Amino acid sequence: MTTTSAGRTWGAALAACALLALSACGTTHENAQPKPSGAPAATKCGADGKYTIGMSQANVAEPYRQRMDDDIRKAAAGVPQFTVNFADAAQDNSKQVEQVDTFLTQRIDLLVISPNEATPLTAPVKRAFDQGIPVLVLDRKVDGDAYTEFIGADNVDIGRQAGQYFAKTLLPSGGKIAVLRGLAGSTPAKERQDGFNDGIKGSSIEVVATADGDWLRDKGQQQADAVLKAHPDIQAIYSENDPMAEGARIAAQNAGKADLPITGIDGLPIESGGIKAVSAGRLSATWIYPTGGKEAIDSAKRLLVDCQQVPKSQTLSTRVINKANADQVYAELNGS
Image 1: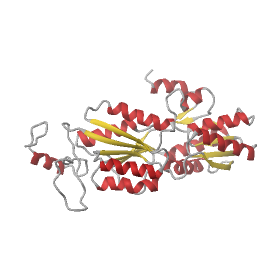
Image 2: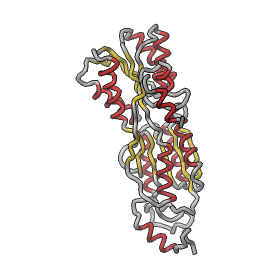
Image 3: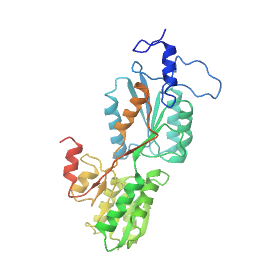
Image 4: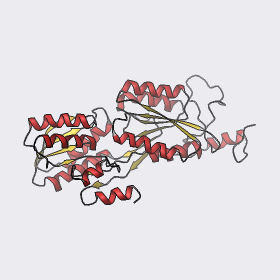
């Protein structure tokens, strides 16, 4: 007879799980009873189990996403019940869909995903959710609500803060600026743009050019090169992440505008990250955007090990990084 660590019978375990209907509690894949076609598959939970987590990453070309994977690895190392398998979609929607479906075929116990784009990844996420597999969505959203929990910062609010920073601090008298956007189909790109537009509302700031840098440094530089040639009179650049902002800095230097104000978002506390870029004067400001990696493992532990519920949404905190606080914040985030 199968028992929990407390010696409860299998029937008692099922009764306990029934009281946690919204959690990930259930039977193991191996021991699950046959179900009618179309019925959701159960998942297992409990401190005595071993659990395989599939982590579907949009790409690892961005330092932010490398850090997210690293944060997940570090946090998961502290949970002996967990094994995490990583997949890199390399900014390819079709590849990410295939990788998620492969995870489902492998009968993972929980899916963590940071979607490349929202709409193409909605269906595979729903397939996992409908099979009873808990799904934690990080950073970028999918359409609808067929997932267990979304974990990420408020991108609209970050964009709004950036817009207000331009209106009140960088260009209080107004001026012409350019915007480097992230990947068009990803939700942070739209939300950071919407928030920024709201933040500069009522000011004399004019967005004269926008370009898609797809979150990448090299493409950010290419797009900024083109923008600066077409609009040599722009007075600042708002970049929706730090790597594109760093690329824009190179473009500005090449255009003879080494002092052009440029802001980013991410604020990774690493040597090559946005906080150090602000400290060194390459960026005027950035906003911390936590990866959510630790929080994802915390939620996975609650669901799988502790058999508890998690909230539908977990909003992570942010803060502005400027020259005045960059070194202090960097030290704080690195435990110095």
